[in-house]
Each structure stands twice: as C-alpha cells, then as structure tokens.
Length: 347
Ligand code: NAP
Ligand code: ZN
Image 1 (spheres, rainbow, N blue to C red):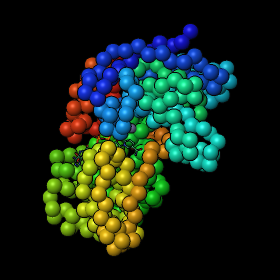
Image 2 (tube, rainbow, N blue to C red; image 1 turned 90 degrees about the vertical axis):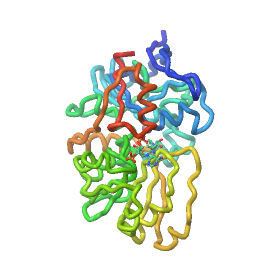
Image 3 (cartoon, rainbow, N blue to C red; image 1 turned 90 degrees about the horizontal axis):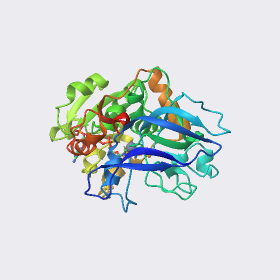
C-alpha cells in the first residue's frame, strides 16, 4: 500500500502548476515518512521547471526546501521518531561509498547524488519534491530542526541557508575578512545574515538601493548599487571573498576587479548560459574564480544548529499552493522579500 500525497506539478516549461496526486514508496527499513508542512521556493525550482538546465522528465513536482514532522519510521530507523521536527534539502540519497561521500560531501558524490526532485532513486523511480504533503526519505538525508526555529522559517535554510553557509565556511568568512554578497534575493539575504554572524565585514552589491534598509538590518555593514558605475571604481581591490548569488548571466569580470590579491569569487548563482571570463583580471592579482554546490548532510545539520544558536532565520512570505505561478513571476522580477514558502495545508 503506497502512500498517496497531494502535490502541485508542472507539465512543461511554459505550463502553470496544477493539482496532482503522487505516490510515495512504502517505507524501507531506514526510511522515514515526513508530513510536509512547508516548502520553500528556490530559484533553482524555476530554472528546472522552465527547462533551463536541460531536459526535464515532466510532470515535475519541484521543492527542495522541505520542513515537516515525522509521522512513521521504518523498522531499523535509529535517528528519528514519530513527532520529530525535520527537514530535507536538495538531495535524498547518494552512493555512500565513494571518497566524497565518505568525507561527508555527499553533494559531490562521484556517482551523482540523488536529487530531491528530477532525479531517479535507487529503486528506479523518478523523485518528486516538496510541493507536496508527504515524502519518504532515508534517515541519513534528514536534518533535525531545532525547537527554536519555526518550521516555515526552517524550510529555506535547507537550500538557501546551506548553499551560502558552506562557501562562507570553506573560504573563511570571519572577523577581519571583507565579504561581498552579490544579489540580495533568497540566497543573498541568508548569505548576509550568516556572514555577519561569522564576524565578517559584509557588503551587499544589489542592482539598486531599494532594499538597502533591509540589507543593513540583516547585518550588512555597507550596501551599494551595481547600476552605478562608480561602485566598481570605489570598491576596486577591496574584498577577500565575493559570493555571487545572481540567477542571471552578469558581467562577472567587473566583479573580479573588486577582489584583493588572492581574493576569491565564488559563484553559487547558476544561470543556464555560460559566463564569459576575462582571465587577465584573474591573472593580474592571483585571483580565483570558484563554484560551490549546497553542502553535505553533516554540514547542513551544522548550519541548522548555527542558525538556531545565532537566531538566524530567513525573512519569508508564506503563500498558498494556488499562488506558486504568481510567486515564480515575482521571483523572476527580483520582487521577493526574501523567500516564498508554500503552506502545504492549502494543497
Ligand atoms: P532569487 O531569490 O531570485 O535571487 C537572485 C537575486 O539576484 C535577485 O534577488 C537579484 O538581487 C539578483 N538578480 C536577479 N536577476 C539579476 C540580473 N539580471 N542582474 C543582476 N542581478 C540580478 O534566487 P535564489 O533562489 O537566491 O537563487 C539564486 C541562484 O542560485 C539561482 O541561479 C539558483 O539556481 C542558484 N542556486 C544555486 C545553488 C547551488 O548549490 N550552487 C543552490 C541554490 C540556488 P538584487 O535585487 O539584490 O539585485
Ligand atoms: Zn535551492
């Protein structure tokens, strides 16, 4: 007897979301059944649903910022029990055996991690994501949500939180370091809060100054508009680390000029089209251009606990399941403050 979940699915790149019923597998020995309460809307959901990252196996149920309650556990589950508050992020499994998995970097599994939606699970079934009422996940890919983080606020941490926490940690955001965040949307606003909590001096580089007050309130020390040419002159050579969260293809070379000697620009923004890189600007000051993908399971738990300890939560707008199409339009127009979260009780 498989589990039936209510969901919102999309049937093609130009289609609207519709109601759907999807099947979740019966619980295997190490599986937990989660009743999803909230699911965040990540720009990656939009890139995927619109087919910008390659062919999609429609119908697709996106959603990889999942928060809910455990309602059933498999016979050998040891980490969770019924009633626990838990989350699931961008991946639901990996090989567990390769060098990267053994290092706790399951997102870089050499056989490919199994993505929460748009993937194929180890039983050969397509995976479907969090815009739904229930999901079954193996316990090792489930994250515990601390009691002082509301479920709706926890959801965006599972992608936007970890995707910014991981490179900030890896490249050493800390007191004495100057960090710039490019783009203040879902990922960007989390990056500001987390980098601030890590003690770095934080600058936001946004298209305009319209969100400046919010940025300063999130913990930024400085806020500049990239639409003003003097921003690039004034800030030349200033940052040890730049995290680019922009979902679109921007002139990345202009930003290399803002790095110090040995500075690094990390792209987490993932536009479908290639970026044109002028290597001279990297060569000139031994600068690095890097990428980073979410974070491992251990690090995701670490990020969750860090946010609980530092009282860091996203600023969210809770919507009903009928508002997904409208929310997508608003995200595409950079009109999001700062993450849409679906209340799955409206499915
Ligand atoms: P989002 O909420 O839409 O934020 C993106 C921000 O980028 C916007 O709020 C806007 O900020 C800025 N922006 C958008 N279009 C722009 C343009 N044409 N020129 C300049 N700036 C522009 O998106 P998100 O959910 O944070 O995701 C951001 C990107 O990260 C997406 O590409 C997503 O797929 C990717 N992502 C990657 C990973 C990973 O593991 N690497 C994980 C999650 C998401 P301002 O208004 O402040 O300018
Ligand atoms: Zn995401």
